[in-house]
Image 1 (cartoon, rainbow, N blue to C red):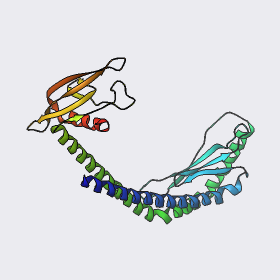
Image 2: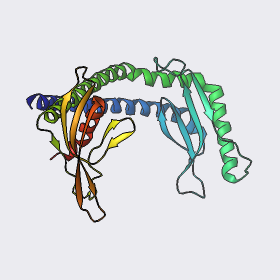
Image 3: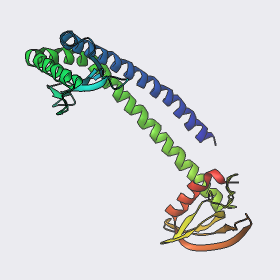
Image 4: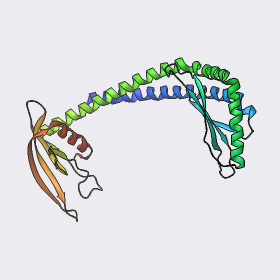
Length: 268
């Protein structure tokens, strides 16, 4: 159907735009995080042992790591968290240190305590300056981040709307077929017992399973229910199939549509 082809082409074009915006956002945030990391390095690393490193730096905070003799990778010893009272401004209002406590007195833990003390001293002396420089890094990309995020949300909304339109058209086509000659289903190649065939709830707590044929005979005047007929199949342990006809009235249209949706991939 031409309308479906047009919609799918439009979605493909929008997905390219979506990918590009996400890439630009990622690049802007990477640049921002790099600037914040330089601020942290400037104020802290010069005062700490050379083997201390920082990672996962962003506008949410950073983590200090220290090599541990029992592990191949450095261990996290201290987090700095950047608190924001107003998330819409994106600027940080406070820097909060977070670390675990222990009664262990190994060289590693004693070194960690020393490092925590140094970080605490830097925060006491320079927290206002650190906040200003971190906020400067945030503000440098704030406007472009807001603009690109707005554009991304618009693109994603358009994609979602077009996907919903496609689903609606596909359902209309399936209903048209079901009202006409009806639909036939065949199990997936590796399905010996018909478990991949659709099912439908025809009454409360009553389900017809393994449907091989389905026809909507008539939709009620309200459009909420319909009369259906068709066949379901049963398989014996050795793969022999027996077909059983069925017919029900006043079946909810929502249940019929769900059955049509489930059976879309196993239609003949």
